[in-house]
Length: 420
Image 1: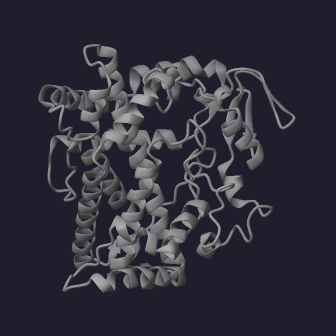
Image 2 (image 1 turned 30 degrees about the vertical axis):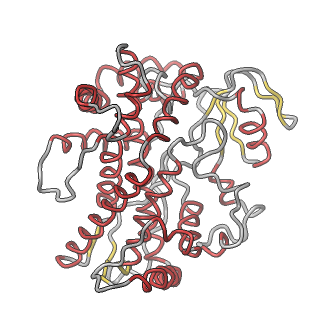
Image 3 (image 1 turned 90 degrees about the vertical axis):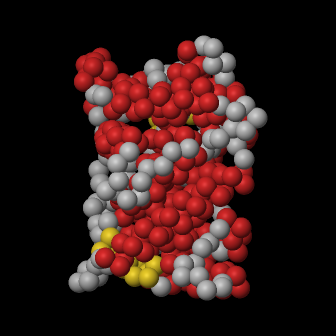
């Protein structure tokens, strides 16, 4: 791309051969001003060079593993219940709803509670020290979703890098906040009872070294940015596509209602929990079809070849940036029947794991994919269990085209929500 030697992979067999059979040759990330700016000079985890990634990944995986699963599930379910209550209040005031801010607020709350034990008030009229993060995070979302020539044309790299390092303030604003939180956690930690992911990370790293504290801050920022943005975008597409596909929405509702009815007492709201996921095959397929039909990151997060490699007869030179064309894998007719139609049933009896890779694959696949799936399930299932989603009155179908950029995002839209 630009004048950077890049290879875009469209063949699932080649992708698997590179990332599963020969993964050690492709464990680094390409260097670019944006990756350096967001990724702590390639020392964090998501955008880290291989050497730092190898050191940091085991500690971060261990921190994930050491968090109390029951506590995490309870946290997710509590946040989802508050999210549905907010939607109920909104529905009483106005049937019109803009899903974008709503979804970002939900996903931000999940991450803040899971990682830092903080809340972002669902009531936007409330104020708190966490509120100051919303604006810089929003600006980072926009920057990461756009294509910048400064990342892909070599002679522009130093100019764009200078601009990011000296004139953009989002990362320093976010890091300042997270550094305060990490410092507070270090001072108040109970090593036998970690409160959240930051506590678990403190237990994994030697915090007598400032560079390790900086790594914890960096990872806290990366998971906040990546998880909030990507999951919120999937949920936003979910609102749009289910509004446009009423038959699929009603099938989901009947299935969710069937799961819940045996447990009903006199509840005003249906509450779907993680225990219900195995009993909602059509809904699960609908969520997968949403991610296939509108793949948020069409080219995934690129990796870079660390040595000359030949795979499936293809020569890949050292230094080449490798992109997985997840959009092609999800839309080519040679792989899918009627790929341009929204058909949840396609996933009912076939996981399509050879083609469907929303969280990438291999050693550098998404570390938080399990948490992301749980978050998506709870939010989307409880939305459909409690509300009917439709285009606004007078609109037959909401525009399904995407914005232009490195991320596939919907244009601004509103939906009509009605309590079931």
